[in-house]
Image 1 (cartoon, rainbow, N blue to C red):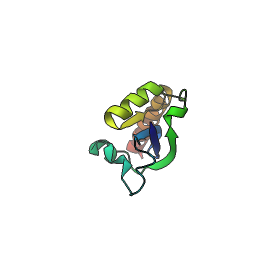
Image 2: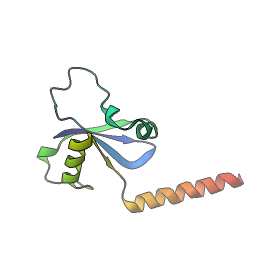
Image 3: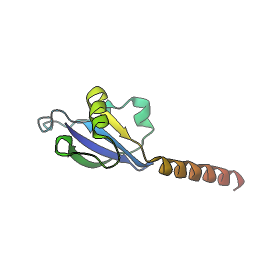
Image 4: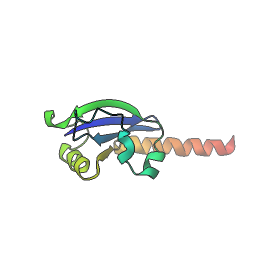
Length: 106
């Protein structure tokens, strides 16, 4: 299974894998690959930045996620969302809360 990986500057350490099952035969026309994402979810992501193309068949394992889980999601829904590790999410939430509280008093 081939996939493209995107990141979103508004969401640190979150990556979205988009299935490309027909690669390289799907490159004849320009396509909105992120169109498989639910509209509301996509709208909240902001601008995307292409990270890389990946052939999962050539990888034994992935760094932060289970390869089998990624493959299952790509096959069933056409995308997989890799969230940041829990400690990163917690720090980001604390920082946002602090910034929000600080803005009240400015």
